[in-house]
Length: 254
Image (cartoon, one colour):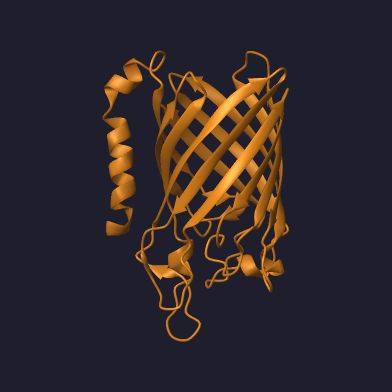
């Protein structure tokens, strides 16, 4: 479909770049492709509990600077499309395309990461709908296996009107199991949506995942996720987008 053309181009370009794969050890550039049984972001399904295809490009310099682009198929905007007074959502909006840049460094036993992230949702929106494009800045610190991260929205958050200044707090622990290739990750997140009348959009999410490095760039993972999200995150088809769910993924990095 036309709404997925840009993402398909991104994926095909990644798969047809053998030079990047051959020079993976020396090059600051990398690509990635994933198939997931459900695209969850901050515990909320972006695909109406259906599978998604994803992929991206990254640059990571030896001086700590990094930048990249990443895309995924989505359906949540189209699922909410309505017409007339109080219209919401967008039609022909099947792609999320993110661009980001930042800096990573270390100070003693602590590493840190600061950056900017723009979420882009190309599509034709219903008259009166707030566009979902979102700009965030973020900062994270890591000590041992624990990472704490705070994201702050510079404007409206994902189409919620008047939500400038919303925050997302992410606390996670990443534990590799010896030389087995398995990694266990525990996660807690708190999405706080700013603005008068937007308190119903705030929620917390929880996740426990296990991933396995299969070698030659391949990996698989399984994640159990749940949230306490309310009716705000039930779509027009009646699907609870923040419900407890198991997500399976197959990925490859070049």
